[in-house]
Amino acid sequence: MIIFDNVSKIYADDSVALEKVSFSVLPKEFVSIVGASGAGKSTLLKMLLAEERPTEGVVFFDSVDVSSLGKRELSEHRRKIGTVFQDFKLLPYKTAYENIAFAMEVAGRNDEEIESDVPHVLELVDLQDKVWNFPHQLSGGEKQRLAIARAIINQPDVVIADEPTGNLDPLNTEEIIQILKKINDLGTTVILTTHNKHVVDTLGKRVIALDRGRVVRDDKTGRYTI
Image (cartoon, rainbow, N blue to C red; front, side):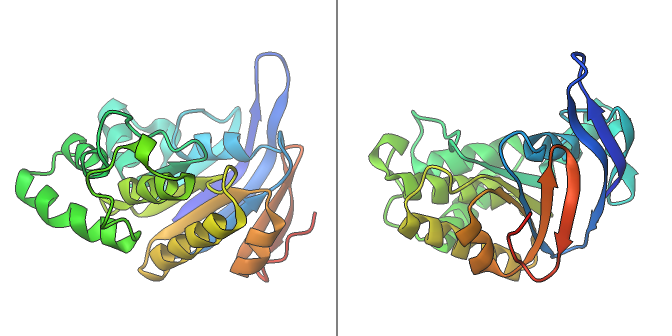
């Protein structure tokens, strides 16, 4: 599904974010990408979303070079990817229901689909009793579960979770990881970036380790070591 083929990213100040990175991700796989701050994790995700272009190499999604996509094709490409951020990026003046409904509206879904699907996805992330709450009325863990619901509502092929537990306590962290595993079990590819060793060890899924822009480990056993 996803291929990074000898990808490097060098910025204008000659700083190297990625250097000759090569790996592939299969459909329905769960992959954790680990490494210290500055290792290149965020740049790698931006490449997949075509927010950054490689200096060298190619990023493929479903056999298509994402850097070659035009404006309309790029919009369609990004709809195939649901993104979850560390700081949630929820709309503060919309309720839980409205945050998810808005994502559906942007994707061109009709009112009937919205009324049918939003309650189901809120139930999936155990927020069925918070339907009309605003983000400021939710705990950190609840906000992240709402962000996940928004990311999956349009049934993306891939969910990217960029440090989704970075601001959460251990209990909420465990809940988020279990939801991501559930999403993966339902057939969605999940790419998780984290530097939380406990999260990776709990998952027991494939781990790709980055260090100063290079892939230094690709371990199918799910151990967090660099």
